[in-house]
Amino acid sequence: MFALNPSLCVYLHRDPIDFRAGVNGLCGIVEHALKLDPFAPACFVFSNKRRDRIKLLFWHRNGFWLCAKRLQQERFVWPRSDEAVLTLSAEQLHWLLDGVDLAALRGHRALQYRQAS
Image (tube, rainbow, N blue to C red; front, side, top):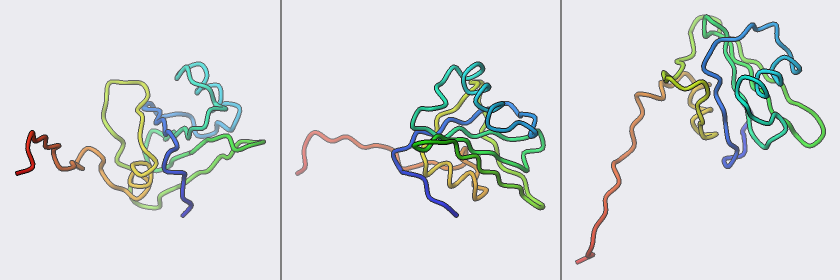
């Protein structure tokens, strides 16, 4: 498994795509559907309709990386939202790739105090 820079912004495209799309097709989706810059320091995540395949697209110095993962039996738990694109952290992307349901994860609530003693 590769590791992405923790400060990298990750954009998850909500709708399924035609998985025959390559770099040019995915760049078109990023530019026209998501209204984002494919050359930005970000990772763009796409899935097929069955949610058993994921493609990652990102620009690195002088070219695009296009990574794909195909599950043999399971499905990716795709986050639910009304938004066309979701913003994730690199850590959340790793969880998604590992099959974790992001909606089920809840951190501790933030506490605020006025005095320490």
